[in-house]
Length: 488
Image (cartoon, rainbow, N blue to C red):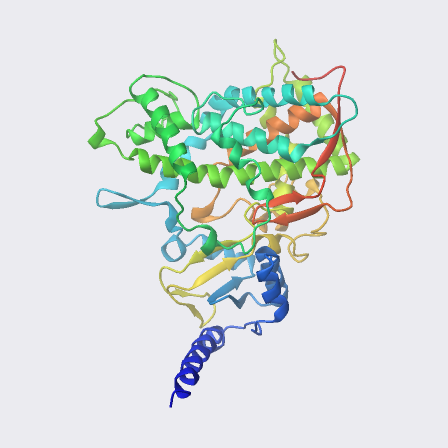
């Protein structure tokens, strides 16, 4: 009698797991053969399992199918392999909206990301240009002090420090220099994703987390907000515009570009300090990793190809001569006119997307066009951005770094297949800002220093999920200061 209880218990567990792992077969979708092998369990136990690699393998196993059912542990997920269908799904907010940016304003539900998008328009970013330049100048000064003798620098650490410094100064409103010795809370971010993490997934990595770091960042937000609302301080940065939004001020009036905060009563404010802090921390978490990763890997690819390196330098020199001002200062117009460097950054985002996959949960039953199949409410769909952009059917020679595929391109199949900046509600609203931050750093480094990449045999690009350079010696570059420079 007692033996029947464990038998019944394990039978129920077996039938439950079998029911989950036959979901796509029962729904009529093509699916992978499921099973838990010892090799897989060993990788999970040793924290060697790479989530992004598993997605790429599942994409390859799908063959020519537009949709392919896979399982990530006990979560049935539908892999979207067709670019046109992926665009249709990601641009259908009624069915596949990203709820992380939903916010209740009174009795109305609004998309907070859409409302904050004007912060990063061209006119606003141009206004922030000098504050970004101040940070990059601190980086150049620090590099000058470190290039003593023939010693090489780890440029991944340098660029990560620079990017986090930009976010500390412009997102949190601090006037700080992280290249100097200090105990800033932002220095904890610099090495955060260089450590190997195990299973990376949207579901696991985006759970709400509370830490001492969150409370410290909230204190910075409270202090910075108070100085702008009560003290009347005006500073051209992201923090200033977030405070304007908190007070219900208009962000879309580009004719005047007013940076002044019109303070209202506390009960009339749109965002509490706690909510404002969450918004800022989300921008930090998303923006820091993607910007630092793309800047580092763009420099990595440029230095590996003498022809690309030469073209970038020639463009910097030509544009500098064509738009030379009286004081020879670097301007937003000069940075914006560097089209080949733009193409390099876009090619980096294609080859090493900072968001290698996009997941959405179906909010309402979705009928797949020209098919009888339906994606049911509550099911997870995944667009494998990295796998799509490394598919030779979408891009010629996908493993080859070729900026020319995007240089002055206004149309074409490859441009249409590019998903690196997101689609629909998931489009990167801060693209203008991130591009300026990256281009400014690359221009200053390439224009001030003769840079030589020291090749290492153990270099790997790993995704955690943001791509980083993993090597025992890091991304080592030998730098020599130019005797003469073209810009600043």
